[in-house]
Image 1: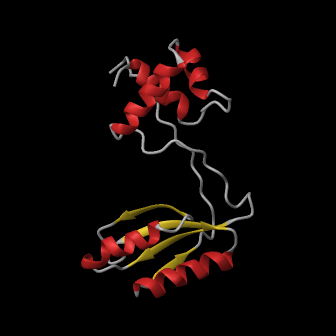
Image 2: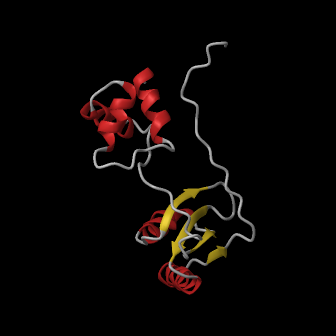
Image 3: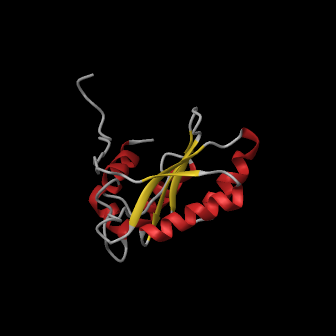
Amino acid sequence: MDAVDKDILGIIQSGFPIAPHPYEEIGKMIGISGEEALSRVNALREDGVIRRVGANFGSRELGWHSTLCAASVPEEKIDEFVAEINRRSGVTHNYLRENDFNIWFTFIGPDEETVKATLDDITEKTGIRVLYLPATKLFKIKVDFDMKEDKEN
């Protein structure tokens, strides 16, 4: 990853241009073509540096309901369980943890009833109870990573 890649990452973390040709705008900001900017973003995705390019919306502000979920899934059923939750469009991400509750995921739906019904459906289809863990207090911390090298160290 070179300085140009780092410049691109610095821009797209929270300042992705809302424009008809966003990669052209990114390119203008750092002195490369839009084609090169897009090519570099694609290469960073292929290398696993970028997991996802997309918007983050405040589900609560949009009137939607979100929750953290957890399940205790036997090792031999993990792939089947994860495939079932990944079929749901409201699942934003999931991860495996070393714990009795080893599968965790977040789910967003249009309302609390829909979210609960979907979690009940997952339980019914998999035979694995899903814990519904809605936030009681919201803590949102915005994190951007400084991509510039520290010249002092």
